Image (cartoon, rainbow, N blue to C red):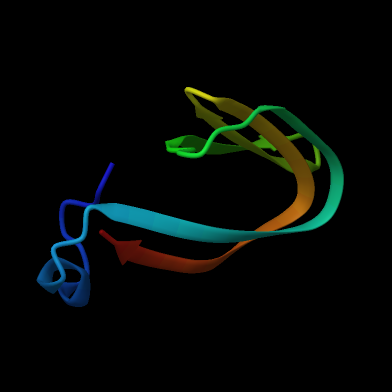
Length: 79
């Protein structure tokens, strides 16, 4: 879902997508089921014992990653 109050430079460009770049540090497991060309879906994160669980689900893919640390490297917009 797009933000209700985006940064001014985003609103000026009439964006319709947001891209998030994440870094995973000290990964203990990755599961990927499926793949597609248009992987638009839902991203959730939760604490899984002493790890961070990152889950991505779309029509064509299910991804699960467990890592000690997850950082947001970049948030950008585009058409």
